[in-house]
Amino acid sequence: MGLLFAWVLANQAGAPVPVVPSLIGAGALAGAGHAHLPTTIAVAVGASLMADLVWYGVGRWHGARALALLGKLSPRAAMRVKTAEQRFVAHQSAFLFGSRFLPEVNPVAAAIAGAARIAPGRYIVTVTASALAWASSWIGAGYALGTVRPELPGPFGVVTMVFGVAAAIACLGFVLKQRRRRSLGSGV
Image (cartoon, rainbow, N blue to C red):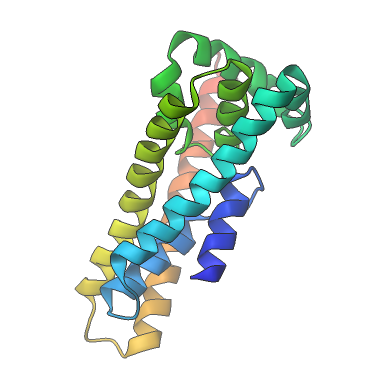
């Protein structure tokens, strides 16, 4: 559980580490009876909230400087920060809720919420609901997979499922990336 906590914390804090296969794997372990499902979800939610609160605090205390720091995380980050600011102004709660599901956007949304001085209580309720939906969806998918293939021997079955799901997610990501490139190239 400690490794899952660290991995989710790193991802939700903005590090470019793929966390979805880990969540699915943790869910598969729970589905196979090797972990407790509510504890697994609580660990992922707790790590997510820790990252959120750190970036919220940075945004609240350092405002524009925090957003400039976020703009330096990756080559396209400055553009993403500007776009995120515009969308945040238009749809605060929906943006905070949905940003969890988009890599590299979650820390930007948290810092913008802090810089915009969103009330801490409102912020915590929104990001807790978001973290719970995010963690439950991926861990729940893994849990379902962990219960589907009980005939495989213990660890071998779990490892096989995790790699199979990770490969499917990677293929889906590749297809979506190719579609996006084509649509951007055609000017649509």
